[in-house]
Length: 303
Ligand SMILES: Nc1nc2c(c(=O)[nH]1)N[C@H]1C(S)=C(S)[C@@H](COP(=O)(O)O)O[C@H]1N2
Ligand SMILES: [Mo]
Image: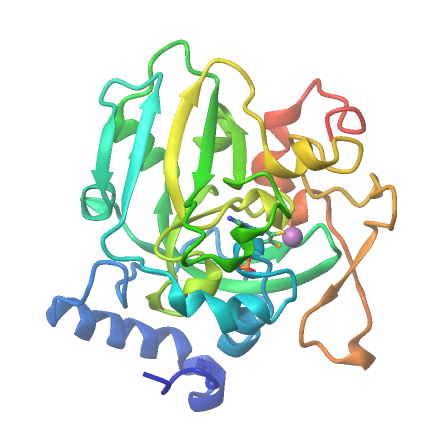
């Protein structure tokens, strides 16, 4: 199936027809009982940006996914080896219904939506990505969060046979991430199962990955196999690697520079050399929705 690889909706469809066309296709896919992750979407979410999305090709050929190599093109080349079906997620820790859940159970009843989000990597490049997914809070409410839980920890699959990057100790596998419970329950925080109306490409974290649009991209952990509710702040991969450079919160913040580069601006992938850089926005532009989560915190200390 290579049909869509180098096309995106704006190539085949006038910009103004996009949403209608996608909704039509979504409807057809639903009637045909397509896989749960594919082609199904609700009305345009008020959380979506109206900015022009990056192309399918840009989103699927310029990736960070160290399990498949360090270069931006490695995940697209190497991730085809990954088996994503069957897939299950262990949900444990301070939950009412711990267990090993098949992906279909995780997704059961989850209201899938399209969310067009800005995505800002800590390396100072950015994209606009039309995710398909559902709010993480939906899953957490389904499994029941116990009163003592204050954080949510996530882990990526470890399978060196299919993830060649894991044959070397580039990182301390598994890749780990974490959120405070209120961040995890925020409606902007989604588990994404697709993009551009299609199931999640392997290089983007198939079959299911986290997306937290107001934080640097490395918080948005891919190919999740474990979700644990904890009382203590969990260990997270980049913070373990270099705590001086990567904080637990890692909220996008143009005023707090990375020790080795400025975070004041970013390069929008594909914008072309004459488009130059755009100013980075506090909380990646989601401040109206999320700033209240951090009232009373000094964000230069809690970076
Ligand atoms: N398991 C895992 N998740 C990961 C990474 C990774 O190397 N391994 N890279 C992170 C980084 S640094 C970024 S910028 C985003 C990139 O997501 P994308 O390739 O879908 O744009 O994934 C994040 N999630
Ligand atoms: Mo990143």
